[in-house]
Image (cartoon, rainbow, N blue to C red; front, side):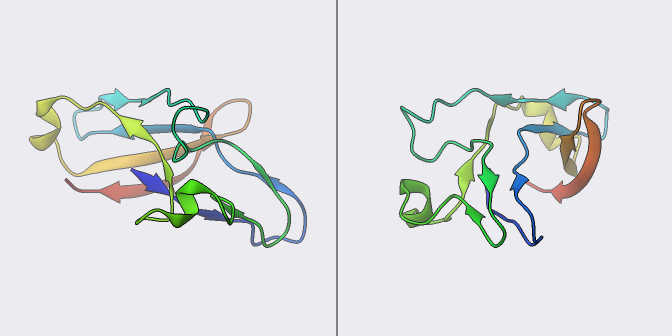
Length: 105
């Protein structure tokens, strides 16, 4: 999946780095590591200034067809039977769920 972020506050903010996908059976799937030095599309946590965006301007990911950073998940075949899937965006020291996004394949 490809993500895009914008800091809409008036202070510096750090983009998230903790994500998982949850199916209707309660199975969690976590992103595989993708090295930013090997893949210019890899999502990396960044500190964004007010109004800043990730992926940043003039980066490989910003010029790509999705204009987003890559999170790579390996899902098994059962997810097709256990839809819809939910992307959970977690943060803070306790990895509390900050937001969820409904996904469909």
